Image (cartoon, rainbow, N blue to C red):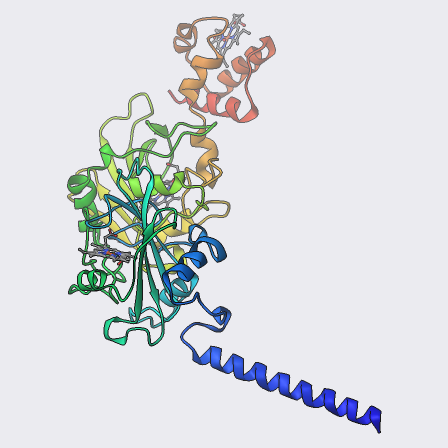
Length: 418
Ligand code: HEC
Ligand code: HEC
Ligand code: HEC
């Protein structure tokens, strides 16, 4: 008997626990956040919110909005009054997940938190963190103004300057043309507060106009040099890009590469411009074409959202634009990084099927390896066919010339086709 009732009691408790759990789950699923975020957000006071973003779920480990053609949020940004000359913006997972979800309508869910760091210095040298300004969306807190709880604190969080339904924050943040009381991020639309030139629309004409006039690519930098290559000058290449190329990347791409968090995939708004020359490295001749890659969020997710353009050197003729199959097929080869073939991010090694040949600059190699014992004159004055050069080079190797098998091949073909 005793045994029976204990079992029954245990059974009843189990049923109760299941019922409670189910209720909790249903409540959570019904609630504003997704079930994974069912854990309650911070309490609705400045102190609790601060404690939460500084200690419990440190905002510095959060991400920011996805980059778009107006801003790249992953870094320091030029800020506006009253937020300091430079800002950095972080958003919690609740907000990010909502943004990335299908059918997102521009209104963030409850428990979204946006933390903005405010600095007095420049984007390059922001200086000390001067203040934290925070927006926290709390169900039913203030339906008249998007249910946002506002907070302003000192940079180290030791002092709170304002909190709650702060009139000043709301009045300014409610300006027209914004999204859900946000002034910087506007879901792909031009934000209400905007600093700097927007990136071009995804059309060949707009892109060419941008790289030739609005932000001349010749003033951009190139990939950072690695052990194997320095990308800042003319580089040997092969079909279909001409014998010689020069590659430029815009600031947005460069800044992303420099970040610790960089994972090898360039952010939206990255532009890579390649100059194509017909002639060899030492005499490239006139620029013959421009080939361009431009990453546009949502443009073509199957192939990392790159928008491709091939244009004449002055941009007057567009030879191909858009999701160009030819470009995508060759650039999508195995072992590359984000459809890039020259620079493998973040390893910095070269990749791509065609890279072995163009990687060897035969002309430069002769200067380095073949002038150890005699002058270049001696080589330049000789004229032989491939078999003749193979014999000479093998004899030189016998004397001590240092060449790999590939370099030997490259020299034979270069010297016999001069
Ligand atoms: C006079 C106008 C003004 C006032 C007042 C103001 N802000 Fe802002 N706020 C801006 C502008 C402009 C931006 C976007 C530019 C930037 O990021 O600096 C912004 C951006 C933000 C952001 C980043 C999210 C977004 O909206 O893009 C947060 C968070 C924020 N403000 C919090 C606050 C808080 C908290 C207060 C009150 C203590 C406040 N703001 C008062 C103008 C204002
Ligand atoms: C048959 C293969 C092939 C095709 C087709 C091709 N590319 Fe490339 N591309 C390469 C290789 C190999 C490199 C790296 C070597 C170099 O820089 O020349 C490269 C490099 C580039 C770069 C420099 C960034 C990088 O990937 O390293 C750009 C920009 C570029 N290509 C644009 C284009 C565009 C635009 C098209 C289509 C109109 C195109 N490519 C078609 C093989 C190809
Ligand atoms: C270790 C010293 C050494 C190095 C390195 C060297 N050579 Fe020579 N090279 C010689 C000597 C010694 C001669 C003269 C004797 C001969 O012709 O075999 C010579 C002669 C030549 C000649 C003239 C003879 C002919 O066959 O026409 C050519 C051309 C030549 N070298 C090309 C090269 C090339 C190309 C390389 C680089 C791959 C190279 N050499 C590297 C030592 C060297």
